Image (cartoon, rainbow, N blue to C red; front, side):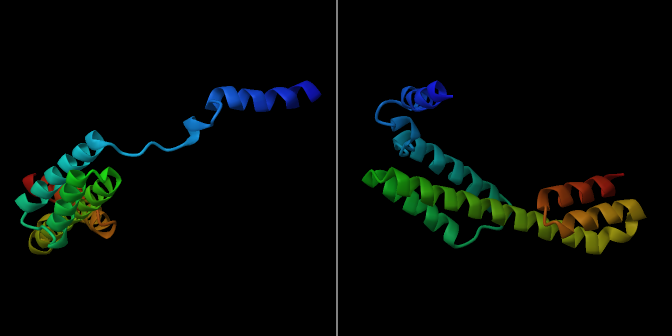
Amino acid sequence: MISLLILLPFCWITSAGADGDAARPVAPDSAAAAAAIARAGAAIEAARALGNLWLETPQQLARAIEQNGRGNYSDAVNAAERAYEEARMAENQAKLERARYLFESEGTRLGAAERDTVRALLHTNDGAAALRAMQDALAQ
């Protein structure tokens, strides 16, 4: 038992490095910031294509681009991730509204099981799934 207690700290030091640098998080670099900005830009374009882009979202992307230009990669990634999340929420909102509109205007054409499925998806706020289910049900 004593030998095990002596070896455990030694194993931790060798696996984490003598100064423990393996346990430290790595700060984002220029490539990570550029990737986050590109991802946010694509999400913003998808929301814009649906006609539902929140006012603050492009400003978040502009902040990300500005911080990236200044070399503040961590701030750039944070702003880009906020822009991405806002754009995804705006996209979901647009799909939910379209699904709700179709459900209210065309829901009587659906069978009981299809209505229950769409209603459940609307209740969970899954815009993409609700719109797809509604469109599939109407296509039949």
